[in-house]
Length: 249
Image 1 (tube, rainbow, N blue to C red):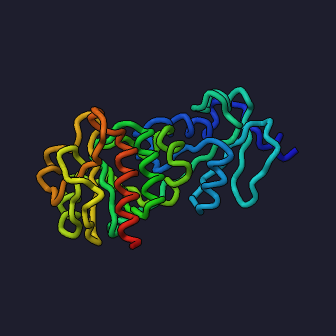
Image 2: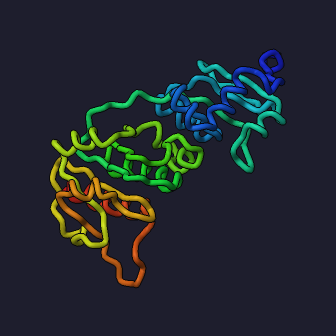
Image 3: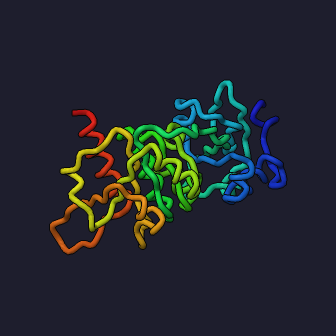
């Protein structure tokens, strides 16, 4: 009976309309909210103490979440709302976290990264290897559907900020800038300082001139074949892993 009384059947309902709007980056930025999908992601959000505005479940889901505002929606409307080809009937609206403005010792700065899957993978690797601050310079939205899925929950626990040139210049005062580029030195032989910003450039064009001019060191991943470069997420993950292992020594 509780589900029936709380069942949303109109596509004009304010909660339904809110989710539709949140598919747009501009509205996500204005509202400081985003949408996650799947039971697994919702459980990760709860585990990570993310600020959940409300949970939306398809009417055929027989589950409740204590202490959370849960709403049920007709299966037809839920299907329209979902961005997934095959949905499990779970969705939630999350309030964006107010992130710390002060950088951690190890920072990754992403310069015009455009692929949401790359960004999500980098976010996950950053958490794994202790890069607690992720700075985005003219990059894809961190709350894009594909980015959220690729992050696999790390989005709830990492410190992500969009920054401009002035903020980059401020970061340079406290951190050494290490740029990943094929013209650099072997990343495995480098000794890394305590305060470091690893800069990963655009998938097609590399690091911008603005950031290249700020570089303290340029490092590369040596390869034995004729491959020109690795995927941005793979490169970032390899280098962060190496830096993390040296810090642990």
